[in-house]
Amino acid sequence: MIFNNDIICAIATPHGNGAIAVLRVSGKDSLKILPKFFKPTTRTKKFEAWRVYHGIVVDSIGKETDEVLVTIFKNPKSYTGEDSFEIACHGNYTLATEILQIIQNCGSRLAEPGEFTLRALLNGRIDLAQAESVNALISAKSHLGRANSLKFVEGIFSAQIAKIRQELTDFLSSLELELDFSEEDVEFSTKEEKIAKLTSLSEIIQKLLETYSYSSVLKDGIRIVLAGKPNVGKSSVFNSLIGKKRAIISEIAGTTRDYIEGFLTIAGVECTLVDTAGIHDSVDFLEIEGIEFSHEQINDADLVLHIFDNLEDLSEGKEFFKKFHTIHVLNKADKLTETPKLKTNQVLVSASTGKGLSELRTKISDFIQKLLPSEETIVITEKRHFECLSNASDFIEGACSTIEIGQTQEFTAEFIRGSISELETLLGKITDDDVLNNIFGNFCIGK
Ligand SMILES: Nc1nc2c(ncn2[C@@H]2O[C@H](COP(=O)(O)OP(=O)(O)OP(=O)(O)O)[C@@H](O)[C@H]2O)c(=O)[nH]1
Ligand SMILES: [Mg+2]
Image (cartoon, rainbow, N blue to C red):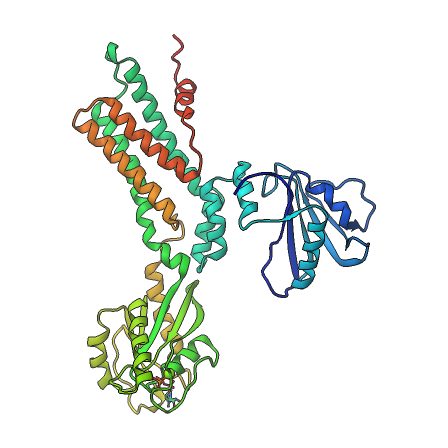
């Protein structure tokens, strides 16, 4: 995408009807086009920054289109770093589209996907890691995922990376000084001190890398598959958990053929619940296909709910499901005359009466909690961040080896440069001059 600062516009809120819709307009001369289609209620000579104006949007022949609020932002303190404004109109999508067309007719063009954020990046409002996280924040499938992305957007992660980069740059500066003074045999730190410093930085990076294992649950939520024999009440439990009649229920065994998905949130995590065809030895061609789907779904599941309606099926099921994270759910509790003793990963429910369903939710919640990091952990969720950090860590290890085996410091310096470059790639800024600037900035080498 070629960067220029022409005027771009877009609808910033989703398709469909809502209370309001918001349109965004940004570009060096964006405020110049505003009077062409917006008539403020109060006399306004000049639109002031960070003020909200009430008024009417009119089309090219002066026909009133909607009553709106316009918020003005001025460069550099705007999202994009340019002059920009946002229009809050009534939340009818066709109306928002009409206003968008009017804005385009006044000398603006439709923004490319992500172009507002790209401008924020190129205007130095945010770095690359922050820009990437804006998207992650919008699409995160969990409370913690959103909170985590916010830490990235706010720059907390970038600040941490910038700190490691700074320490590596300081390290490199003193190495280069030692190289400059090599004939005079000046040493600013011992071999052990150098290794200790690099190891401590590598450990910080390793800790960040380890958090990547949490990324899938934070970003994508979890997949819970209901499986078991036909007619045990899988679809009934499925409907009860999602709170609506989504899957067909009948006393005919083999009712569910295709797998069906529903959504619910447990422990702040979006769960995709999957109802499947009952597993048994079938000769029916269509049912066999459905059972194949069931196996595929079980294999892809983060958690399986094994539904059964009599205790004999439990031991058989235990054998089959032991490869997966499974909660065994004894359904049709209302039909039992005696309450059986169950283990911690087993629960008694009745989809018909609702008995035991909250206990089942609690067990699912307990399972999810174990997959989640603590609130304060900064979790790496982007593959690119993971790769840059892995490479940065490998370069630091390489630097340590050069020191351990007593290679010339030029090799060490090269590895450190590699590591810094990876961190800069992560943040989206590569500036070789920084090392030099750092030497002059921090050391007095005037003589
Ligand atoms: N008494 C009682 N009947 C139930 C309960 N849950 C389901 N049923 C009945 O069991 C029968 C089968 O229910 P479904 O939910 O369709 O079972 P399924 O496991 O999805 O069946 P398939 O899709 O054929 O594999 C229906 O007649 C339900 O009304 C329950 O908790 N108590
Ligand atoms: Mg079913």
